[in-house]
Length: 68
Image (cartoon, rainbow, N blue to C red; front, side, top):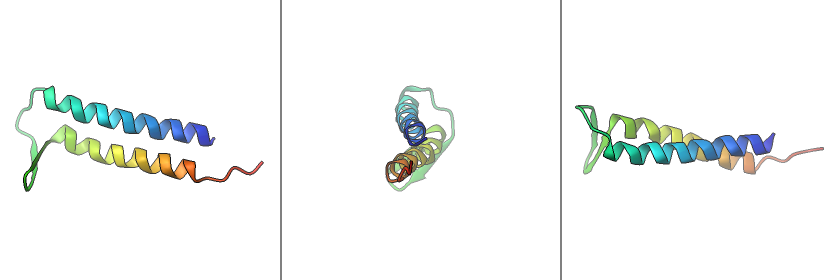
């Protein structure tokens, strides 16, 4: 079970990173989020929680104690 959770966490991390980077080359329309000097597209902004959840699952599943 722990391996399945780590696999899910790794998938979410890698998918989030890939999608965040692909948003740089995708044609942008008019959906932007501006945080001071940081300008993110809507797709980039929506992948940040995906990445954070993936990291949380990865860390959580690594700290679980499996009792047999």
